[in-house]
Length: 257
Ligand code: ADP
Image 1 (cartoon, protein in one colour):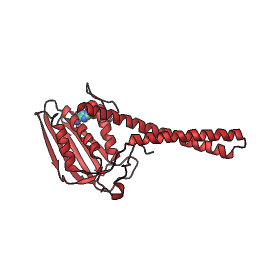
Image 2 (cartoon, rainbow, N blue to C red):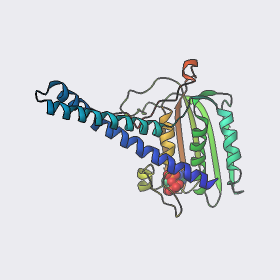
Image 3 (cartoon, rainbow, N blue to C red):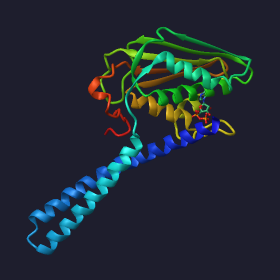
Image 4 (cartoon, helix red, strand yellow):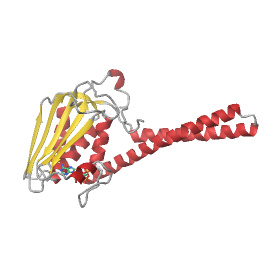
């Protein structure tokens, strides 16, 4: 299961690179295509007009390639109805093998029957990453707590480049009483390949962040060296609309300008 996870994380990182690259390339190709178009339409010299057509066609082909790269990066992910209780049951099963006796796990869901629009597999992977990190941060044992509640987005919480969002959120907490993080780690923990572990990938939290962002949510982390760490995930609660059921979720924040 561990190597599965590493493979999934590598894939996430690759998808993210592809997404970022496609976005930049698209911004380069669009003006090129327009320039070729104008050259073809307005050039007096027919040779220049042919050159314009060539530039436009190459630009168009490039954009098509970029488009398919973007679709790959987004994945063929579908919006589905996720049941909170189901998510945690699956997590519990996955964790059973990795949970040492010295760690007490507590799950406190305020409403296991809460269901919302999202992607079960991705959210499960995200929670699994957070829990495995928590377990690794408690080599001498401790307390792992997973809790959920419905809430508003905290006042001081702004979505990047946007007004604070009004609707209701699911707040998921993953907290441990482990070694915590120093300032430097706290600053860098979402950097790709940043790890303080001998065999870490440094991709776990990046992939969590990406998953939460693709759900339109945000993540917060608090940590004190020697005391523990607390991750909070805020995921907007939206009902799955019938017309949206067949469409892929389309909230890729890495694509925005
Ligand atoms: P990896 O687990 O492979 O190192 P992550 O991206 O998941 O990669 O985590 C990056 C780093 O953040 C870890 O190496 C560790 O230093 C720190 N970290 C993450 N979660 C915790 C936690 N619960 N407690 C202490 N440190 C953590």
